[in-house]
Image 1 (cartoon, rainbow, N blue to C red):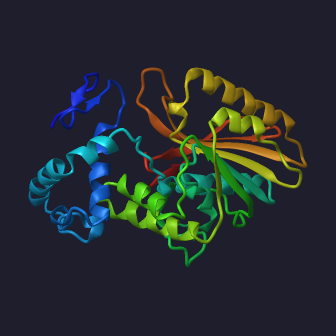
Image 2: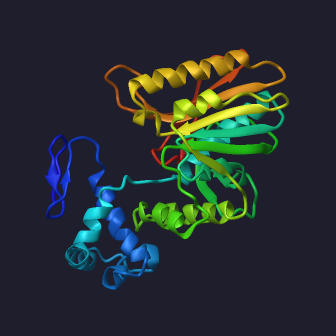
Length: 316
């Protein structure tokens, strides 16, 4: 099986994948991983580290070909489903950003996320983040440990953020409290990436105990309904989702964020925190920048850079 950008390819007989960033490999292998997690591909499961397998690539390839034939029709149908991930590692950037925010403006936080998937990063204050020098923030007993997650100049020391509300939106939200939701999120993590799987499973355990509301909505409609609340700082967060908005949606979302910022005052604060790929210089490489703007009064600041999955985040 091969792929080249800009060309449509046949993945399974009778299945056509259109041009563009269709995430063909993730769709296919996520669908196969789902079968393994459901214990419906026993020979392949023997090689998949996510279920205790050996990691033997040669044996996996042989078993995979058998799975593609045996489950051809089901896999063809699964390819029509868009991948859904909720990368918990990106909370390393969110937690550091929250420390910057509450250092400058102590008090309760309303944590809001657009493109939230299952809302797992809305639980970021419940995660433990360990810096490269061994220092850590967050609960010592957390089932989510982001190890070696902060490099460079650490965020300012601040009290643990007091999150009094956590809610968000997604066009296709996943309910992490259900078996189907947990299965879907896990299936789209590569089976040999044990660290990602462990932090996802830890976040799912927290989600079973801490309620998070993720409504089905596009980002612009959600932001139009969002308002500030006196006595709190509303922190709007998003990560690696801005690119999926059309230019019209990006412009509308940017305008609404500016409106909310203009409403902020000493009683009701507002901050916009993001981890998105940007080109700092024209023609340069994309970098995943942690960017913060707080109202009232502060200009946009680049706080640091991160790996695509958030760990490590390097602070400036």
